[in-house]
Image (cartoon, rainbow, N blue to C red; front, top):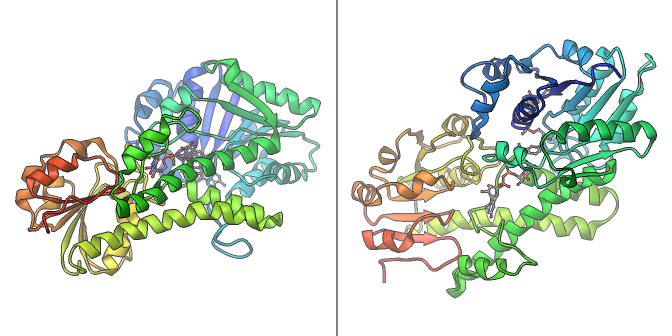
Length: 459
Ligand code: NAD
Ligand code: UGA
């Protein structure tokens, strides 16, 4: 294989851009090219306004861009030149045909495999960075070897475990890196080549090598287990609200059991993000495909509880605001699916906003990074809403504030000033439990946390 120090990544999205920036920064001996069909995205990667917001990303890109990191739309040239090709294209849930609503839509991924076959002039290692269904590498292998050029392609699974908002940190200090390969001589050699890239900065004992299928499945299971913890604590939050228990206290008490651990036990309005829902549904589809309906239904429950939590949040708002929000201004604080990102994919804010618009509420939405995406997400939604770039304007004359993203800046706003500018009685529904509820109650707000008793001035 030629050019083993030249990496191409196909797909310049939330994963492709940041992972390649980190690889370029940590491996100065490699040339790293990131290619995408989206010309506007590539232009943005080459500009001062990157297409995604991620703490630390801009500084990292600036350090290496034009030195050993390049962004391009010339995919054919990229394929010809690189010895190692990461594929990091989107793999959304299928919306049509067999498996619609659950299975992964692999059309973008398959197109890249076909492009590799078409433009490659020598042997390559092809790395699945996208999250794919189990045994996808086999299909990739088949497509790649349908070439009549006599070329050899080794398919490796190297799933990405970073979380948005902490992507650069996660990639610089990963809990583990997983590299799955075929158990053949050429498969093992290819695994070693991928391991040696990460070994530039990741301790060897944190780089796991497995067979391809275990690696593919581990990625789906990791996301399913993380989401399961959130759905578990969210289900308990509903019980807490009925019984005067406090979900924060419960989470703390159980999280101190070292077998359970404290992370991912923050009750919320629901989990969002581009992957949890999609990857669990993909797992569900796989279980159904392999005739395991009980296993499928077990994991589907995680998604059902998340839908329940979002709906419950809205019902709670309507019920407590005297059974009607029609014509009332409601301030939405936070539209991103989590803090420190502008990403709104599958954000609970989308569902909550749409449900409230159906109830004819008038929404005023503020988010420090996600308003452009919010505009796209709400396009076509019936009803009145405005996107506001100042939280104080957002809440002026509103009947309620909803906290839908855990942005730090929401903790330090002047809530007395906000209260004074609002209609009375004024409500706060804290979908992230980040505010000081007692202090808000003292100011005069009626406060509705997730998973603990409301603090209401009505007797
Ligand atoms: P994304 O939508 O942000 O980026 C995908 C990019 O691929 C887009 O820019 C798109 O234009 C490009 N693309 C699609 N088809 C192409 C083609 N034929 N040739 C060239 N470019 C093409 O998606 P993402 O969030 O980066 O996710 C990518 C994969 O990584 C998914 O499988 C996802 O499940 C997985 N993943 C995502 C995250 C995350 O936090 N976003 C974390 C871990 C894993
Ligand atoms: C998640 C995983 O954490 C990553 O390991 C994985 O690589 C990634 O999915 C992926 O495959 O895309 P991400 O979705 O970026 O990362 O963010 P998380 O921090 O996992 O948060 C997901 C959602 O759960 C957010 O809406 C967050 O607010 C919510 N959450 C998280 C809770 O409601 N409670 C918690 O305790 C933790």
